[in-house]
Image 1: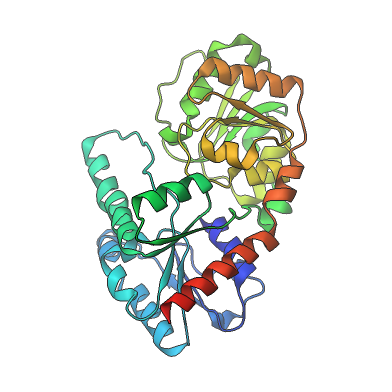
Image 2 (image 1 turned 135 degrees about the horizontal axis):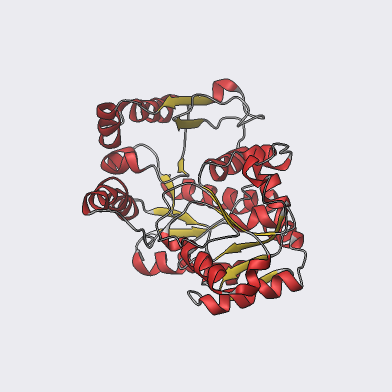
Length: 358
């Protein structure tokens, strides 16, 4: 979510705006190079277990900062970018002073695999239920998926909902990245790549099983790179598969993609996503499941192969087609991820919400 928010903030900021960032990593002066330091408020996320638990339900420092800004800095609108689940129990009161434009990322909750019922309950308590409350109580919404926009308008017809293009996730550190990924020293290049968090809905298990059950794919290594527990059973004979099960630094992303022959996103569900921005910026062919979001944003683009969602054989066939006849995807980036289109759309939406609030 950090690259998503930073891209929008840097694109939209103008004199009189103020940025409020809650972070676990301390202030980052490089994140917003064109924004004066006195126009940014940094709030540290608590580190202790008790403090974190309290913060999730009563984030006093954030609430005080918002209240101060809306009452003393001439703020006409709060633009919520990254879910802001900690505000769920305070959202009605916050909107009494100024309207909020709330970003809907996942209107339909994703499928996750949990190791025990307690983890399922914890997920519902601190993510799913607060998220639903925020959806119900924010009358001005924006999303980056036409398919999701249709769903939101059907589910909350009494609310004002808007579409804006998905921002590029390619920041300066990715674009200029020079760090090598040490785990790739033995792998080399020409591999099949998945990059992202290892969640059930991202279909990583489908790619893993398709690779191991189709010998023709095993002429190329498979690299699965990203955080979270490996949620699916692994085979003893998984030669050719490399897991990089850690956080990949932005400065390593260019090296990770540059060595790949094809990038695969075998999602079983997707509401909206910017994953195609990185691969297309680095001009890598992609294999995508034929979900509505991917089809709407990528259909007809050179270098893209689709497969029937959830079908391992179709996935293997699509990967082979891409390997045998790779195509350039840079035009996808140039046509869909321009800052101008993003700024124009969001400026119009923000002006409309502010005008309605007067």
